[in-house]
Amino acid sequence: MKIAKQRIRTPRTARLNLSVDDVAARPNTPDAAAMRRWAEAALLPEVQAAEIGLRVVDEAEGRTLNRDYRGKDYATNVLTFALNEGEDPLPGMPLFGDIVLTAPVVEREAREQGKTLDAHYAHLVVHSMLHLQGFDHLEEEEAEAMEALETVIVKRLGYPDPYGEEHA
Image (cartoon, rainbow, N blue to C red):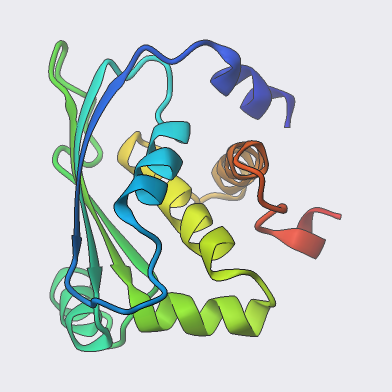
């Protein structure tokens, strides 16, 4: 947890250009200003500029994207697409990527997990922004570092620990 806190204490000088497209058009989806606040909170200080597309989709589109890009035939809560995934960022170039949130899945998970919808959306946006910046959770050590950083950011945004009892 100490590493996570140190990483985001440095003042942020990054500039975020976030495009939000809510094609799911569900009445309880958080607005673009909330999405921007969450994305900015997860932008690490070393990122000088970021161009991010955020799309909120229905279950059919979420399933199609997950099937086409990950080979998994079901709608997942969030998909993250980094322009140069697995590569070092090009010096002087902005961070480029897309985040796709499947509204019905996010809503269902929030209910099942006893979280507010905003808290769950905030966590997923933060989680995806960290993926775009090279964080992953394939190995246990990576997962612990990423979860610790997510927890710090989400709590600073005023929400409870997204992993709840797992971190207790």
